[in-house]
Picture 1 (spheres, one colour):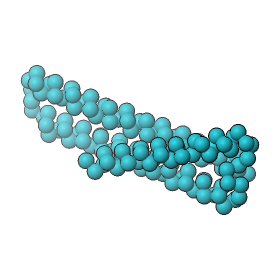
Picture 2 (picture 1 turned 180 degrees about the vertical axis):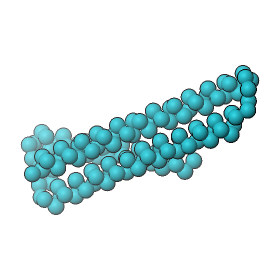
Picture 3 (picture 1 turned 45 degrees about the vertical axis):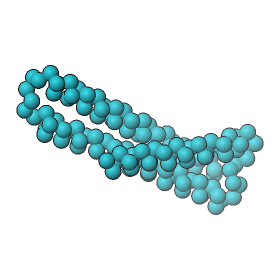
Picture 4 (picture 1 turned 135 degrees about the vertical axis):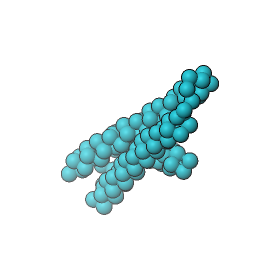
Length: 128
């Protein structure tokens, strides 16, 4: 349960960071000026981009690792010798659906990691 809280908190922090960055980026593009203007502010923004990227990456690792381990444990323990009982079959399908949705959610976080990395690389080269 702690892993899912961590994964959710990573997603919330990432969304809040992105929502905070969007107005500053829009103003920067509209005015044609760089955000902050000084080298120290630019380096701080790059540093925060890298921290958020690493936070996303740790969330991806935790999410995929947790769901794979839990699915393996559930299959090995709960559904080991159930036979063809229709109730267990339905429960097994529901559990598989749950873990598939967890993989999809973590996949979105993986896409956010890739996008954040691209944004960081672009911002580093645009600040020179």
